[in-house]
Amino acid sequence: MAKTAQEMKQSAILAFRKNSSPFLFAPMQAEPDALDRLDISFRWGRYGIRLLRCHLATFPAGNIIPNHKHRDYEFHFIPRGQGSVTLADGEYPLHAGMFYLTGPQVMHKQEASPQEAMYELCLHIDITPLDEIEHAPQGEWSEQWEIAEAEACIQQLRAMPATPALDKYNAMNWFLVAYQTWQEREIGAFTTIRQAIIQILLRAARVYHHSSQAQPALPARDMNMHRYQLATRYIRDNYARAITLNEVAETLHICGRQLQRILDQYANDTFSGYLERYRLAQICLALTHSEQTVEHLALNHGFSSGSYLHYVFKKRLGMTPAQYRQRQQETLLSQHA
Image (tube, rainbow, N blue to C red; front, side, top):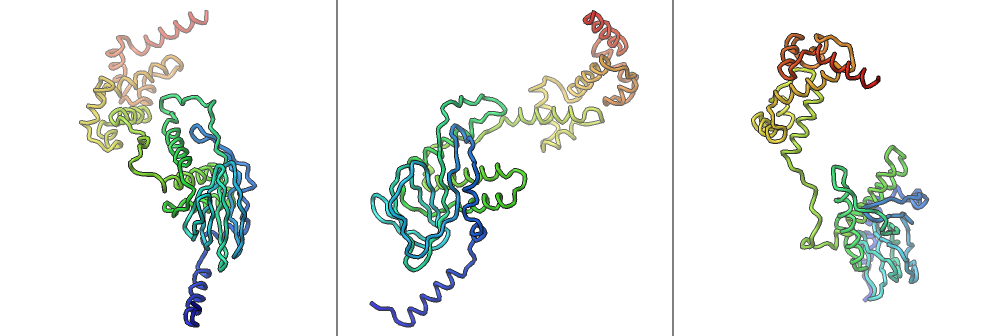
């Protein structure tokens, strides 16, 4: 049935409003293929990620991209306009806010609406398993959690259907982050673009993720051990001045009694005992390798006076600072001889 004049007028008004609204990705129109010129590859977990294309494409109204496929992963995000994509199992409508993944080896045909242009943010990447990477060692600098997250994301991408879905987690906004980073060329540009690519992968995979699926747990700490490490680090950084149990406890947002229990558990000592032992250890080093006086050493290592240091030193080590220095110097001389 033919549209009435009023309906045609309303359609024209709606189309005008849609096309005149601000386009979030308008900055990318200046150089839509700028990121394509970057030779970017990086390791993520046990995979090598190589950027092949990352750009903003414009399909004029009615434009058709005939059937084709890629051996790699290609993400298509629609930030504006509408059209359709034809896959093996049929044709699917596209509109702003949708995305779909074609690849590897997914045949597809794209078509912009006859009434308006369709814009597409394309991320085309090669994902290569790096079999030669050995298991990251367990320890403070372990990469186990990144490895687990990358593995979960890639497995989800491999299982994703090619059918279009809503970009519920705003993955496409990271295209703009990458482009603006390229424009600004500030310190850390590569790291930011790398993170943008990873965020696009994660947020696309999350759309198809079911909460019932097992996910790697986030890294957790033994909080008492962590507090012990922070406390002893603070003591070692500030031992040369007067510090108290409560001062150190406040930096950890715990009470002094709790900190004392932690020191007893991991150091088998009291706060004052641990502090005194560390101060004496530093003084022993200074006695061995310098000619500073006892008075000078006392003031520079947290003791109130040279006489008090002399008293504590003899009580703890069974000799005076002068005797300790003489013994250490004799030992060094014999080693050199």
